[in-house]
Each structure stands twice: as C-alpha cells, then as structure tokens.
Image 1: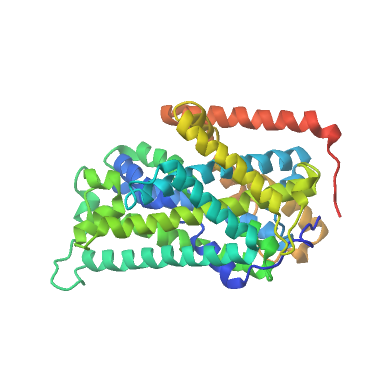
Image 2: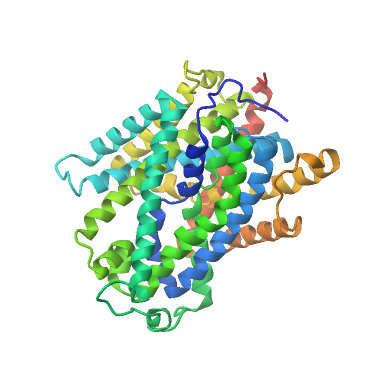
Length: 455
C-alpha cells in the first residue's frame, strides 16, 4: 500500500468532511435535471431515483471499505492501480480528471447563465471566467479555504431542501394553516403511477445515475482530513439517508403536489412547487439556491481534478511539476492545469457549441458508470486479498460480500449495455468508449517513459 499524503496539508476538519459528504451529491442535476426525468417517467421517477440511489449506496460502501484501509487523494484510481493493475489506475484517473474538467466548464456556464437573471448586461463568457477564477483562488489559498467554502455552500443546499420538504409535506397532509390537504391523488391520477410503463422507469435510472456523481469526493478528500478514517466511516454510513431524504424525498414531494405532466415541472420542478404553494419570488429564491449548488459543484470540481492529477504525478503517470506544493501544502500546478483545460472547454462553448463542446460533454457522459464499475471490481479483488492477509484491517465492510458486489457490477453493466439501445445516449457511450480506448493506448505508449516517483 502506498501513502502519498505526507506533503498535502491535513486541513479539512470533521465538520468540513461531514458537510462535503452530506451535500456533495446535491447539484444542479437535482434542482433542474429532475424535471426531464419526472416528465419521462411520471410519479415512477421515485423508483428511478431509489434504484439509482441503491447502486450508489453500494458503490459508496465499497469505496468506504477501501478508503478506511488506505485514505489517499488518489482514492479509487490508487485502488484500481493496486487491485486491477497500473493501466487501470492510469485510465480511471485520467477519465475522472477529464470528466471533472468538462463539469467545471458546464457549471461555470450554468452559473453565468443564472447570474444573467440579475445582471443581464454582463456577457456570459466574462461571468464564466470570473466565477472560475474566484473559486480557483479559494482552492489555491489553502485546502481549509476550499473546505470552508464547500461547508457554507453545502449548508445552504441542505437547509433549502429540508425547508422544501417540510413545507411540501405540510401541504400534502394539510398541516399548513388554512390549506386543504393536497393528498396523494397526483401519484395515481393522470395515467397511473407509471404512465409510460416500467421501461420508462428503467430508462430513468440511466439518466438519474449521473446526477449522483460527486458522492465519491469525500473519499478523495479523506487524504487531507485530520481524521480520515472516522470521516470516511461517517460519510459512508450516512449515504443511505442522504440519498433517501434529499433525492427520493424531494422528488416524492414534487410528484405528489403537482401533476407529473404539467409544463412547469419540465422547466423547473422546484420553482413550480414553490409557486404552487404561493411562495413569493419563488423563481428568485430557487435561482439563488441553484447558483449555490452550481458554485459548490464548481468548487468541488476544481479540488477533485487537482488531487487526481497530483496522485497520478505521485505514481510517475503525470508530469513531475504537478507535484509542486505551496507553503500551505496545496498542489498549485495541478489546480492550474485543471482550470486551464476548463477555460479551453468554456471557450469551445462559444466558438463551437454544436461540435467541439458537444463532443466534450458527450464523451464524458458514461465516465460515472465506468468509475463505479472500477470501484466495484477493485473492492472485489482487494477484499479477497485483505481477508487472506490482514482481516483485522477491515473496519468497515461491504454488506453481504461478495453477493452484493457482484449484483452491483451486473447492475452497472446492464445500464451501460442499455445506453447502446437508447438513441439519446448511444453517442455518449460510444464517445466515452473512444476516449477510454485513447487513454488505455496512451498508457502503453508512454509506459516505458513513466517512472514511479514513490517517496
């Protein structure tokens, strides 16, 4: 087992780690993207979110098991390196890095678009640039400042969703003053609970699974936590209620209060519910919350890309200059490298939105599933090895091993195969496959030049 964290600053406190774990998963995908899922599946979206959430819960449990044994900023890339082979660690590390570089660009553009709601005179490209620069500076300053920003962003998201759930439930059950109970009629009216059949619910899982990407950041952050093992254990144990409350709970409130086929759900389900309840300035409030979610995602993306590059450089699989740390223990060059490529992606959105930028977005589309698949296969191999060599090190165990691990691998494989038969997702699968093949080929081309720089 390697340990690369002796130079990185252990600046993340338990409260930072807890909040990153609790709200890392809540992104713009929930607030905006859920509308399309509800519109396609009806109230059955509750099942789509539950089943996708179940896969993520299993994957996080496996990742938690490995992270409590070896907390490292390389996280699943390092585990794949140890359990499957150097080529797997290299491939998944760069795929994950590429995924977040594209996400940073997408979130910067989304954030700028939201800000235009209030500041319509400022050009979109300038706002995107300013947002990325500001959050890059917080990441460069210290890991503690990243943790602090993420803590407050996450707290706003958590409080918002809890208030949304309380208000929504009080209207559903008629607890709110001077209101009649909305009841559960919308769950079965308008064509039934699954108006477009069970097939659409399964299709919903494929769409939904991508909005959970971000749960694994806590395992990467463990490498810079003052209490890595305790933080990972807490985060892993709480992932069940986080997904149930924040995702499944809020989607259940939306489809119970409003007819699934109403046009307002498609545009913004949360705004539609707030307007139905009669909250003044609903759109403005929701815009502010979504902006917080976008900035949180942008902040996490900048952090994650840099730590993954740092870990690759530690293994001699990225330029050694990326190992350079500031006096506060922050990998400066690794942060700037991620930001640089994200700037290029933002520029491409303006010069070539329908070709280059679309290619980048689509080619990162299936990366989440590949990451989950690699985590499951790594855990399968590592667990068997640990049980032989050092069983007492297993402080946090995957449930019903190996059966649930195999079930998760089969589930992820089914989703990947399904993507080939879904017209809107076929290009994502093919382009991600192309990028993956390119990275694997790069590994074997550059392998003779790569020297491990283990310390």
